[in-house]
Image 1 (cartoon, rainbow, N blue to C red):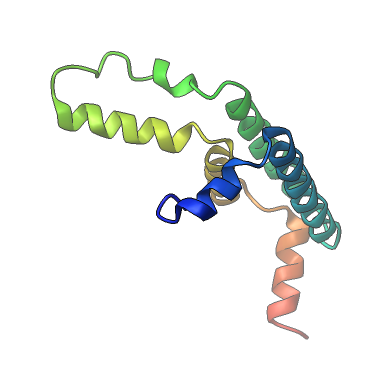
Image 2: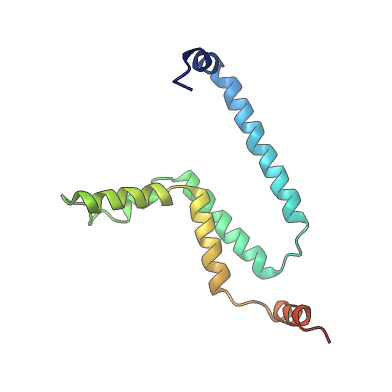
Length: 128
């Protein structure tokens, strides 16, 4: 919006409290929509664990967003390429959304499915 100075001045004139209120309302709206979508799923114990673990680590990352900067302190040096790669990795993993998604994907791949789920999948694909 900086290219169009008149339009940019309109957005700059909006008080921060109004922008904060609208942002809060927007995210609350998204949360309610997500809860509605999740309420239609048939949750298993495994699904609840994957969701809880990923949301826990995602919220923890949101609360302490510089946690990864302590992980690779020995690798920082004079090599600009390595330093750039570390900075890029820090930017990616410092987001709670990213960590929650990575944890959910890994847990879905690693955790075994329950016997009831496997039987249901088998019956859905091969009806008698």
